[in-house]
Amino acid sequence: RIDDDQVHLTSFGLDREELDAFQSLPELARACGQWLILPGSHFEPSGTGSLDADRITILTGADQAALVAAYQMIKSIVAGAMIDPAKLDLGLFIAGSPEGMAAETASRLADTAREQLGCTVAYRGSIQRIELDEHCSTGMKLPLSEGGIGTFVSDVRSALASSKPTSIE
Image (cartoon, rainbow, N blue to C red; front, side, top):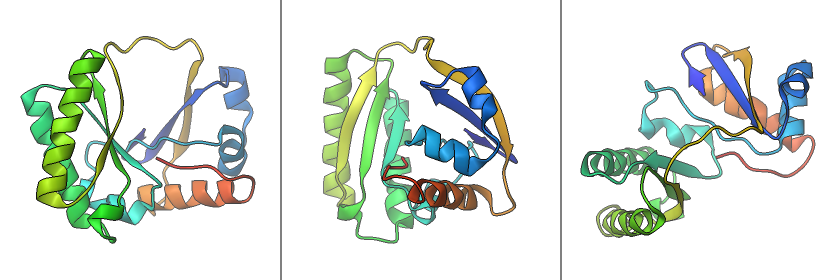
């Protein structure tokens, strides 16, 4: 999660001691392999094109207000994209609803996005209730450089490229 001037890291699979042992972003990037980057609430969705992300996944609920907000976010992402909307790798992850309802909701939103915006939106899953993950370690904080989230993503990509193939979402 990125907030203002700090990056708050959460690792799935590394315990707290392992996470704390890393001395640099390149070390950490190589050890973790896959990264999910959650911009702060002030981040404009239209700026996602500049991040060069492999995939963009929108976390939303299935209620009407959440769907309207998700559609507006998709619309902003498409408007700010530097590529053909059909080539964007967009997806939805629905929280707080049973699987069947989540899949149906995602399908309706994907149909609307395809018809109105010309983009494909994949259903990436759902979770009915968020629970504590005992394999999740939180606590490491890194300062965010002056280049902001764009520079952070670039630094992670460089570290990953120097070790093994992976992806950033």
